Length: 192
Image (tube, rainbow, N blue to C red; front, top):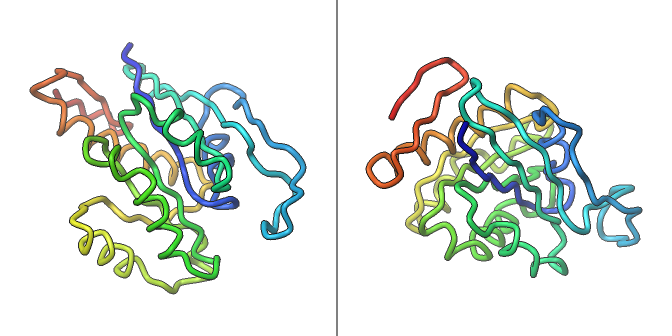
């Protein structure tokens, strides 16, 4: 069985902890504490990292790491992203400026994104449809980036697994010649 490290990042409340809990085969490790920051409208917040694991088709163990979302913990972001094969950026579309939120994480992980697979998951699009997905895609294009942008409900296992499938397909495409890593998708399709 091969290991793959995937990092979930995004603003506080974007759903990193929830997404990892939704797909982890093991009880996730969380470092949530009571929130004392009045600018964040949630009872608890991550101050270290989240961790979980999911095995895909008995072939690959995906180690799931979640970063703290608050920028005061941004020193942890590169530490957690070190040697990650993929990055999942979660954006909460109900926040005042979700496009600016995406840009913050694109900038913070700019160097990593030069060689790391990535997918953008946009949450709460059902209650907050604007900005639309095309706005995020246009921003990526403006920056010379091509990453999938998908709506996601981080509480839904299948939707979070779709994000994982997207980044694993990118890892697979990037590493065919170099690493020879084989990834089997949930659908059972296997590629080298």
